[in-house]
Amino acid sequence: MTTYDLINFDPFKNFSIGFDRMFDSLNEVSRLNTSNFPPYNIRKLEDGKYLVEMALAGFSKEDLKCELQDGVLTIEAKKEKKDADNLIHQGIASRSVLRKFTLSEYVKVDDADFKDGMLKIKLYEDLPESKKPKTIKIK
Image 1: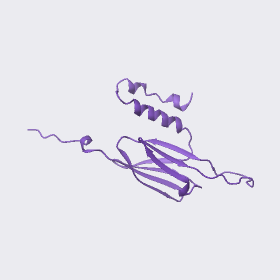
Image 2 (image 1 turned 30 degrees about the horizontal axis):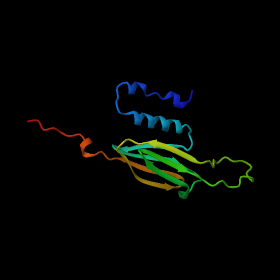
Image 3 (image 1 turned 90 degrees about the vertical axis):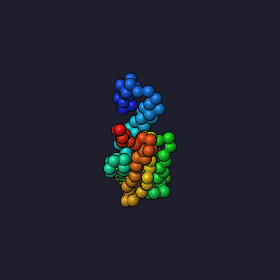
Image 4 (image 1 turned 30 degrees about the vertical axis):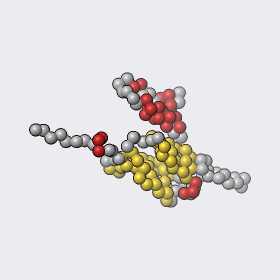
């Protein structure tokens, strides 16, 4: 049994309509994100503001690619393979990175910064006025 097999949205499908795309997207992301490499944190800074921190030691800013498409934030890091013939011990990973995060419909990317081997991506929730709570005046 794989991690993918353990994620079961059937109970939610029993009382939801029109969320098929979201469930399919979550299943796809969970299938792709089966590795613990690279380590990362997701922080909630305050209501509607988030921070993704990813440790990418050995990569440079030029090795990184961040893309947002159809509600999926993709972080990819590729590094040219260097001559490993002279290595006596290789403890530092030199493999490529591919990590995907499914974002809520109204979550947007605010900023991305890479410093000292840490990629930090700031996210914020941008709810349209029609989705914000409204106080109803009682007459």
